[in-house]
Image 1 (cartoon, rainbow, N blue to C red):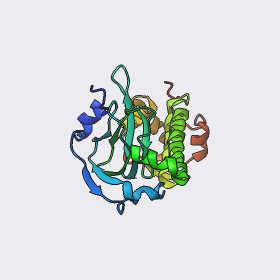
Image 2: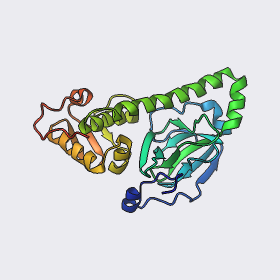
Image 3: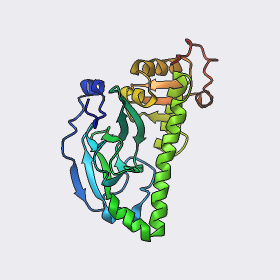
Image 4: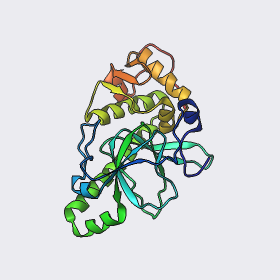
Length: 257
C-alpha cells in the first residue's frame, strides 16, 4: 500500500472508491463558504476572501501524508476522514471531519496524515498556511479564532481516544453512535444517520467490520437502539449507551476485543 494513501482496499473493492489522483472541481471566492448540511457555523468567516473552494470525489485525497503542508482546510459540506497507515500496512482513521471542522494543522513542514473525501461532492475551503500564519502574527482576533479551531481539532482527537479506549466492542460502538448524534445535530439527538460505512467505523474504532455489525445487531436485540437500513440509527435507551450498561437487556454476551 502506498504510504500516502489510506483508502482501505476492502472499501475500494466493495464501494468502488474514486481514484485519488483525480483533480478536484475548484471554485474561487468566499461566497460559497456556507455549510450546506450542518447547523454549525463556519468558524473563521473573516478568511472567506482568502479561501479557494474545491469539490472532491469520494475517496479522493484532499491532503496527503508526507507532502508539504502548504494549506489548512475547512469542511463546507460532506464528510472527510483523516487517517494514517500503520507499519503493517493497515489503515487507522484518526478523525472524522464534518461541516464546520478545520484540519491540516501540523507541527512540521509535511502532513503526517492523509485526508480523503468520504462523500461524493464533499466541499472544502482551502487556506494558504503561510499567509494565515503571517496575518495571525499581527491580528490578535484572527489568532484567537485559529487557536479555537485548533483546540476543537484536539478535542475531537481526545474524544476518539476515549471511545477507542472503552473496554468492549458494544461500548465502543455505542459511544460512537452517541458522538455522531451529537456532532451531526449540534446536541443530543435520538436519531442519527451514520455518515460513514461500517468499514470506516471499524477502522475508526480499531475493530473488525464483523465486530461492528455484530455489535449493532446486539444493541438492537437488547432494545438499546433501533436500526433502519444500514446507517439510520434510533437511540431507544440513551442511558444504557452512555453508561455502557447493556447487560440488563436480553441478548448474547458482550464481545470482548
